[in-house]
Image 1 (cartoon, one colour):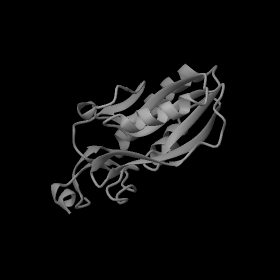
Image 2 (spheres, one colour):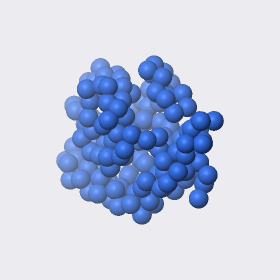
Image 3 (cartoon, one colour):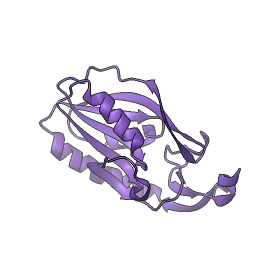
Image 4 (cartoon, one colour):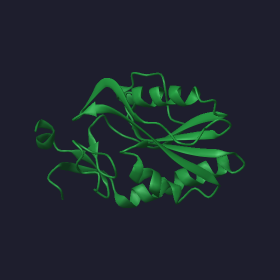
Length: 178
């Protein structure tokens, strides 16, 4: 196993099952809607690509990029890097993120999107870490609630590394101190 990983939290097989479950529910809820999926880059890219294969209704996909972390700690500042290209007016937006921790990033992005007059906005997060929540926001679709530990893999990174791990693992204490 990679030395940066203390232990595997969610296996590749369990991630596949989470995506199937979420895909079925999203398909059911959006089958008759004008769905625009908005993925928050970079960490959500792996999750959204697997999730999309499990959504069986028409949709458009766009990407937004913001940053709020330095190493393992949220900075408290959100840097806006890239806006969506599709005009979301009249769409039902499903905002997808890898993890909801403090909630600050999702709240910020949701407020930006609300200004663009979508019909609705719901949130899907692969992981939910409710213990660190600072913003008043919750996901409508949650893959798994996890403990308050720093996780890597399956798109989630530490200093831009470990996104390519096929599972979600807890960052080792030794790696976190570096």
